[in-house]
Length: 574
Image (tube, rainbow, N blue to C red; front, side):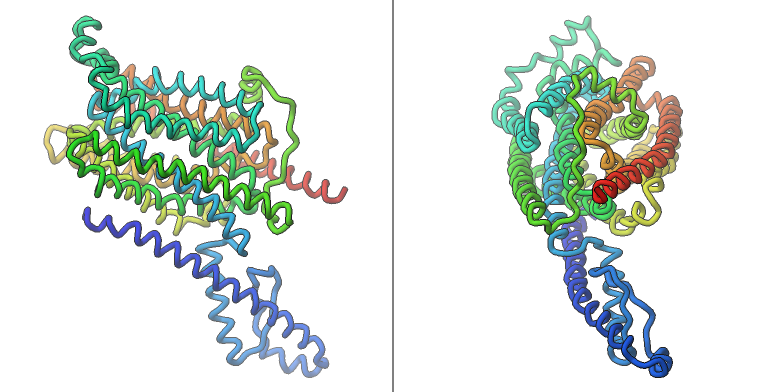
C-alpha cells in the first residue's frame, strides 16, 4: 500500500494535464463558433419556402463557451464533427471552467502561490506535531494553544493591523511572509542543534513544580523542558493561519471577482491539493529515512526555505501580470476596488467586528471549524502516538497521512467542483459540518468501547484517520472557498481588518477555546481519551451552532452580492 503512494503525484499531474488539454480544445471550439454564426446568417437569406424545407436539416442551437452565443449548423458530416466538439466543450466546462489565455495564466500564477504556501504549511505542520507529540504528548497541544498560540496571535494581529495602515499591499505581503522562513532557518541551524544547553532538564522542572508526575502539571513540566519545540509549534501555528488566511486569500480576493471566484476558488483547492502529496512523500521517502531527527529536520528546512522563495517569486510575477492586463484592459476579472473608509484603531476595529452581523456570522463558521476539529484531532493524535512512539515512525505516518489528504482533496474537487457553482453557496457552506458530524460517530464509538488491546487501538487509529482525513479534505475543498467568497462583496476596510481579525485571531480563539476546554478535562480525567464522552457532547453542540450560522450567512451573502452588483451597474450608468 505504501509503495502505491509513489504514484499519487503522477496521478494528480496527469489529471491537470488532462484539464489543460481540454482548454486547448475550447480554443478550437471558439473558432468553429464563428462558422456556426455565419451559417445562421446565410440561412436567413434563403426564401421562405426553402427555409421550411431546410428546417429538418438544422440542428438545435448549441452554446458556444468562448463567445456566449447560440449557433445553428446543418446536418451531414458537419453535424458529427460538431457533436464531438460540443461534448468536449461540455466536458471541459465541467472539469476546468476557465476560459482564454488571460484567465488560464492568471489562475496558474495565483494557484502556484497557494501550492507553495500549502507545501511549506504541510512540512512545518508535520514537523511541529512530531516534535511536540513525541516529546510532550498530544495533550500538550491543548496547553500550547492557550498559553502560546493565543497570546502570539493576539500580538500578531495588533502588529498586522498597524502595518496594514502604514504599508502598501506588496510591502505588507513581503514583510509578513519572509520573517517566518527566516525563523525556520534559524531554528534548524542554531536553536535545535544547541537545545541541550538551551533547555532545562525535565527533572529540574518537575522539582520546581513540586514533583509533578502525572496529569496537567506533568504536561506543563514537559513543555517547559522542551521549550524550543514549543516555540517552533507556536510559530508554525501562526504561519498556518497567516499564510493561507492573509497572504493568499487577501491577494486572491483583491484580484478575483465573484463570477471568477465561483470557478477559480474550488480549483485553487484542487491545484494546491498536489502540495500535501508532494510534501508527504518527501517526508516518507527522504526525511524520515535520516539517521536521526536532526538530519531529518535539516532536510525538511531545505524544502521549506525553497517554498518561501517560490511564494515571493510567484507573488511578484502574478502581481505584475495582473497589473499589466488591468492597464491594457485585457482582463475583465479584476475585482472592483471598494471605497476605503477612514482607518480605525485596534479597539475600533474590534467594535466594528462586533457590530457587523455579517462578519459575526463568518466568525461563527471559522470558530466552529476551529473548535470542532480541535476536539477530534488532539484525541486522534494521542492514539497515534501510542501506536508510533518513535519520532521518525510518527513522522513517517504523518507524511503518508498528508499525502492521502492531498490526494483526497484532489478527488473531492474533481467530482465536487460544481457543488458551489450549481448547488449554491449554502450547500457548500453546510457540507463540512455535516460530513464531520457523520464521520465522528464511529470514531467516538470505538473509543467508548475501550482501547485495551492493540487490535482495538489500531481500529481506533484507523477510524480517527478516516475522520480527520475527510474533515480536512472537505475543509480545503468546500469550507475554505465558501468562507473566502463571503468576503468579496465587502468594502476594503471590512476585507482587510475584519478578515485579519477573523482568520488569525478568530481561528486561534476557536482552536484555543477548544484547547482550554480539553485542558480542563485533562486536569479532571487525567488524559483526553478518558474524557471522550464529554468531548463528544461538546463536539456535536458546536457543529449545530456552525450549521445554523452557515444558513443565516447564506441569505446575507446573496443580498450583499446583489447590492454590490447594483452599485457597479449604477456606476457604469453614470
